[in-house]
Amino acid sequence: MSHRTPAGRVHGLGSAQHGVDHWWGQRLTALALVPLVIWFCISLVGLVGADHATFTKWLSTPGRAVTMLLLILATFYHMKLGLQVVIEDYVHSRGWNITLLVLNSFACVLLGTASAFAVIKVALGG
Image 1 (cartoon, rainbow, N blue to C red):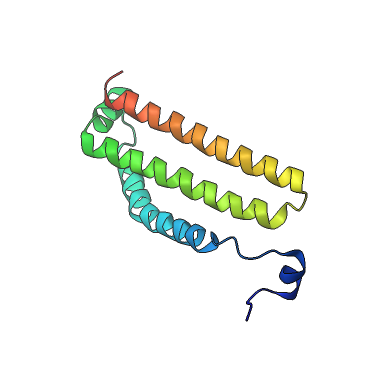
Image 2 (cartoon, one colour; image 1 turned 30 degrees about the horizontal axis):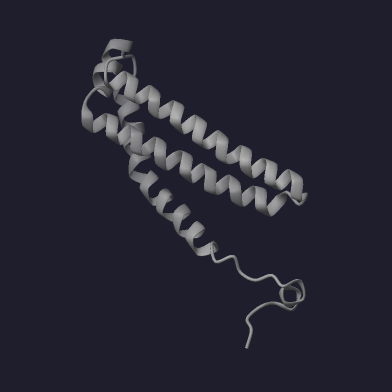
């Protein structure tokens, strides 16, 4: 007994077996982002009016730098997964679909890496 839809049987298409992994990835990053964003917002409120030197000193502590890196990693991975769903659901042209999925991946890696580099540079006093 096949669980494929009639159209799936005709086209020879089945499940790609990646939907559950994608769903879990999105849920776990969302769950990780809750405390990280709360920490970030509380930290920003505490830094209102601070100068560059104060911020640099604040970010230079290992715990804060690592937490900021975790926030960046979770944010950009969550963004990649979310935009991928939007592109797959709403872009129907195969060429545009592939192009936008590749651009989404490159943009998230590039922006995430640049953000992580900035945090590491500030944290290490560069």
